[in-house]
Image (tube, rainbow, N blue to C red; front, side):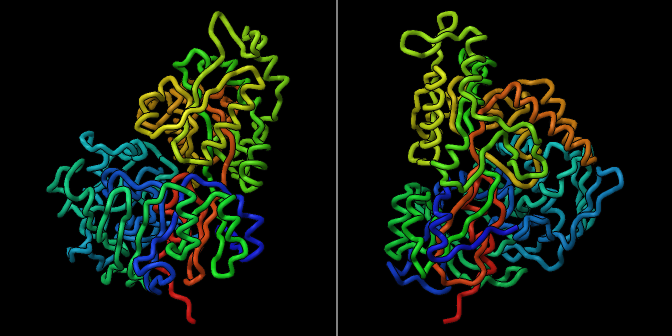
Length: 530
């Protein structure tokens, strides 16, 4: 499914799309003189590494690397380094991939099954600092069975396993001889993808050039740059001046381009949610009554209307309401009266200043959001306003992740996430008690045995009905004992110079800018004929 494309005045109606990521292009030839065969897009954040062994490009669309599989515009799996979709055994535990012939890495060495085995084995090695290795927990073994055949054996019939094989493949002949966590490969990678890395100035830009030997054909866009531009206003200014080719913008800034006939606006549907973590280790947010009250004290509809200008949906969990995995009946109505009763019944009584107190504990806690992120700031302020009406004082604080992360055990955070590939990809990492405090996994340190069992049942079954029933259980448990207050699912809005044929959008995850956006398929773009 691709997003709608809106031109001219029609873009105004969708200019209200909000997003945390941002993209823009800086013009290497100077303002207003972008070369026809170059594109530069901005991103709000940059990766910590360019090594797939450490997590780079794990969800696909890496420009330097390819996975065994990739996604098309409709998010359906299709072959990449594999010549076809995998053969799956009847018990769902063996996946066999036959590899594409004649593929070479950018240094001229051939790609083989040894590279696939090396990549997955290295990621799963306990010594490798890959925060996402839990995503591959189902793998029991991976074996190079001849130069063009790879066999994965799973511990259980993990239904979405093929989705995990969009993960980029690293060259064993290069990376195996280095320190996986800090070697040169982490910043100077070699892959089989459509682009070669030419430079990385951290905090500024990542630059690429077309791979002339790419197995899919040399891209027409010869130079591609991702400019790191965190500030929304700066991106918009550079876009308007002609210095930039494209940007992902919040609605108030995107609206200014609605009548521009030289640019196209792309609105991408997403699984991208914003939520508030409710840490169990805080005396207020760890109280189930407070959690339940906050979950219905927030006015999600107002957030969608006022913060997103309608370009999004109310969120009641990680699964969007229009997904077939959503459980009807788990919607939360905005009900301040019921929220007050829940708190009253639990012994949280209003003090003279209106803020509730129980056993000498004031119903107050901090809520952190990332500095410079207007969308998170707006959501945090709206949440705090709704909470205060219920007698709970929320103090909003801005900081970098370096400041926020050490505080996540006790302090609430305006967080985000979302993946369209499979419900396991969000829910297992977000809610599994075994992952409490594991980096950004289960940030709220949520513990619920019923949820743990359901998450395991869902990922270990190949039966769609069993999986649906398990995720229904998870969503109903979050209704009675929320560990997070989910606020909205947001759409992403991009403004792009109208000079290429080929841009479009996929259904997007939370992480966007690097692999998502209209440039997800930049290797297929062609300059428009004048």
